[in-house]
Image (cartoon, rainbow, N blue to C red; front, side, top):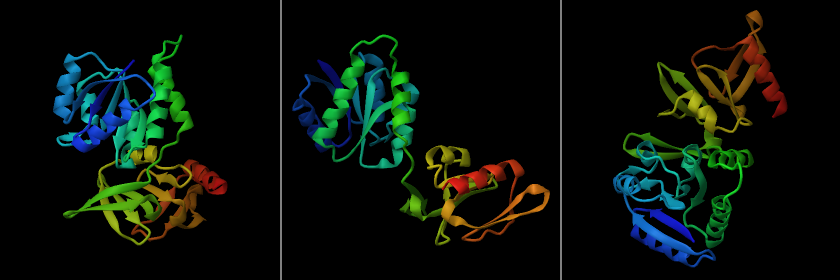
Amino acid sequence: MITVLIIEDEAANAARLQKMLLQSQEEIVIAGVLQTVRESISWLEKENSPDIIFMDIRLTDGLSFEIFNQVDIKSYVIFTTAYDEYALQAFEVNGIDYLLKPIEQKKLESSIKRIKNFITPQPDTSIIEVLKNMRLQNNIYRSRFLITYKDLFITIPITDIAYFSSENKIVYLTTHSNQKYVIKQTLDELMQELNPSDFFKVTRNYIVCLKAIHKLSQSFDYKLKLELTPTVNEIILVSRERGISLKNWLDSN
């Protein structure tokens, strides 16, 4: 028997998920259905941990990641969402799987089966080891960015991005068409989310896309001068050490 908690703020989605779980080949018991971050924190503080939590990411009162800041969750968590932009963050808080809506019965069954194997006691096995193995098998990188621009929300595919830059502690995203937007992540955080085959941190202020590199030339003191497209209003000099890594990166792509 597998106990399941559902955290989902849309009643129709919660009902559909319940139906799919009860139609599963496994013996499932629904421990509860919750709708908000606040309600979930309260429930988890008082009740026994279920085996699995199916957790929507965008809830009425915030992102479900906030729950992890308040409660030490010992259950296996399967995130369910219509947005794949949160995949990396989901795994960082020990999510064991990530299902995009609308959820397919086959993928649901596969996730439950995988977790059932984890639930079965095995020597020297911990959830951290399991997650490490999963991350080795699944390289998850950003495919798009959701940008707030004036009163609009704009989705920018990763293929449209030329480079990221930092100016006066503000980080900007610049597209190949020379559109510039402010984003909230730091450059170091971005490097954890970007595919290293496509992006390289050339200096402490620039992460560049391979396609944005227009020219690379030798400068003084063994530094490299980098020219980008779209152009920038400053000279980008890459240090000798970083320049060696950059040339190796360019040679391998």
